[in-house]
Each structure stands twice: as structure tokens, then as C-alpha cells.
Image 1 (tube, each protein chain N blue to C red):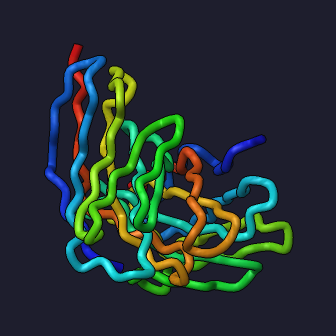
Image 2: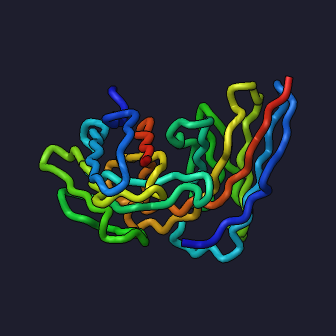
Image 3: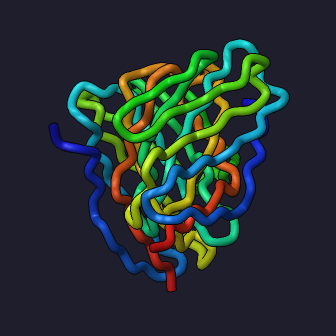
Length: 111
Length: 113
């Protein structure tokens, strides 16, 4: 799986959009970009994934650049409950379910 | 629909003992993966089982083993426990291949004294 790079920490004001970047410059054509988050001491929670098109669900939007070398996870209206560590993972479609977690971005939503 | 369940939630063992952790996946999911999370190493993949067969394996010693039953429930076993095995052990289930998302359980917190 391609290596991903994320900033170690970010702050966001409550009610504002949180934009979390991820760099995956070595991503291959058959690797999806996945986002998970982990709230303190809980199991990671799936957020969203995409291959090359932008994706949106009830939790977030995923914007993938045209060259697929980077992506941005957008939480449109961050709340205090969105405070968590966010992980961006590149995973090959046919590689089973092994997820390689990096350090992630610790997002702190402040009132 | 019930989520992934793990038992027990907390466990204290003594160095040298062995331990078995259990994971029940979401109904219909055939893939179960196990992860270890420690403050120093972060989240690390242990192994994955799909239809009772180990499909992927991480870089852990042979003391760590697992199995999956015909109903997709999975167990992992750690023998000859070491202090460094103290961690949060997480189980995740999925429908099948890499194009599907995984759903994690709450984890089992293992403390080795």
C-alpha cells in the first residue's frame, strides 16, 4: 500500500468546516483512499472512501485531486464530538483487508 | 443491525500465561481482522481471516495466533505473555475484499503484569 502523510495535529472551531489533508504521492491506480477516525480509546470508525471521484456521505466529503496524489477530508460543520485522530489510508483493492495505519491527524475541535 | 462485539472488554494476565480473545463480526461479514494498538507502536495489523482461512498476516511473532469458525466468529490467542503485549486488541469485520470498509469493535484491553 502507498505511504500516506498527514499533519500530526490540527485545530478547528466548532461549527466551521474541518479540512484534513492527506498526501499519497505514490498511490497506484488500483488503490482506494480510505478515511477512518478514532475517538479516544474506542475502535476506529469508518468515515468514507474513494478511488478517483469525489465522494460524499452523511458524515463527510472526500475530495481527491485529479492526479490522485493527495486528498482532503471535509467535515462540513465540525462539532466537539468530532475531536479524534483521523487516519488516511491507501489500500489496494485486491489486497484483502490489511489496513496500514500511520500516525494520523489529531483534530481538536474547540468551542 | 448489531455491531462487532469483542469479549472480554478488559483482561489482566500475568507474564507467561496465555490468553484467548473473542470477536463476533457483523452478521453476514466473512472477513475478520485483528489489530494491536499500543502507545508506542500505534495501530498494527496482526492477521486477517476470510472463510476460515488466514488471508493476510502481519509482522508479529508466532506467539500470536488466530482462527475463524464456520459462523465467521474469530478468536485470537497469545501464548507466553510478555509485558509488551499489554495493548488494546481490536477486531474488525468486513464483507470481503479490499473494496469494502471495515467495521471495528470496541476492543479488548489486555494488561500483562
